[in-house]
Every structure is written in structure tokens, then in C-alpha cells.
Length: 249
Image (tube, helix red, strand yellow):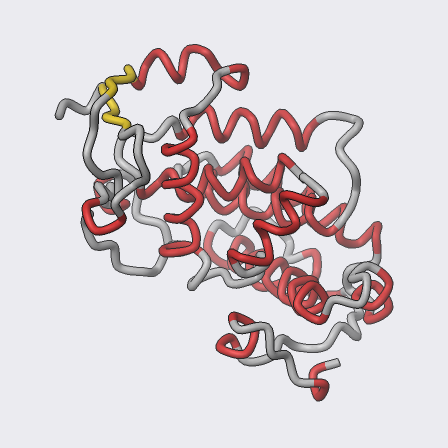
């Protein structure tokens, strides 16, 4: 199969035969620290030209199998290194009930780093376009999406835009009070898993802000001087199975 084509199976993807792109073939990024194995898009019957997908931009209907493969790749390769987005099953429920499309696009954008010939530019354009509109709500999901986009752009060596979305994530987080303990309780609708996700988002943002300042030396580590009483995250294994101890609240 050539690099300019995608083979899309009309039936369910066979996860045992998936084609994964090695990130090391593109840009080595300290924010992506996990090893990649090979194998995500399975047996194929329809050919779709990758350049055609890219040229259609954000209006293109990305094949569902491709989007699902990118979504799954995010949780297989990115989420273990950056476990602040809700676990997969919980995020799917949020996407069905609240439908923050910018977060889904950002998740698929990062997942596309590991799916061979996935329309990475299309996912990126969709995420950045949605996040940049005046109608985009200023909430925790927008912080998460902006932070994911910043991480992805940094790994594509697009430092200027990466810093723009990192700053955007910081601006929204501070404006909505994500650094304060009250934010967690007031914006979780009683969901302990969502409370934990908000805590993790704040501290992920804090850590990434520090890494940008240290590695690129073009950011002032703005969050360093921000007082925060947001509790530290619980154990990751508890988070993934939705068992968050009350000791962390």
C-alpha cells in the first residue's frame, strides 16, 4: 500500500491487524515518551486518497473507521503518558451527551500521529477552528482540547502555534478558576471521575507549562506563581477504573 492511499474496511476494524505509524519517523518529542509497536488499520476494500482528504479541509467527512482508529490510538499511546482526559468509556459518554466536538477533534488529532496515512491536518484544522471561534465555550473541556492541540503542535515542531494554544489553555483555566478546589465540585455534576479529570487537567497544564519554559525557554512558567488549592491526582490505576478515593477530595 502506498503512502498516498488509505485502505478502509467496511466491516469492523480488526485491532489485531492495525497499521501504526512510528512517531520516530517524524519528529522526536519529549512530550511523547511511549514506545510504539506496529499494527491498527486492518483489512481493506475501499481506497481513499489521503491528499484528497486533506484538500477538503474541515468540511470533509472523515471515514468513521479512520476516526475510530485515531480515537483508539489516542487511548492506546497518548493517554498513558497524559492521563488527564477522561478514560475512554467515560469520554465516549460525554461526547454522546454533551458533544464537545473540539475535544473529540483534538483527541483524534493526537491519535492520528500513530495511524498510518490518517488525515492529521484535517483533525488539526477542525480542532483549531472550533477552539478559535467566539462561540467556543470557556470550560474545562476547552482547556483539555487546547492543551492537547498544544502538545501535538509542539511534537510537529510548530512552536509558535503550540505556545498560542498553551496560552489559551492557561487563560481559560485561570478565568474559570480551575486552580481552585471549588471548581472541581461545581463543575462535575456529582461525578467523581469528572472531578478527578479536572484535577488532572490543572496539574497536567501546570507541568506542561513548566516543561515548555524549561525546554524551549520561551515561556515564563506563568502558572508557577498561581496559588492553587486543587488537590493532587489519585493513583492512575484507580482513575482508570473509576475508583477515586475520598482522601483525594
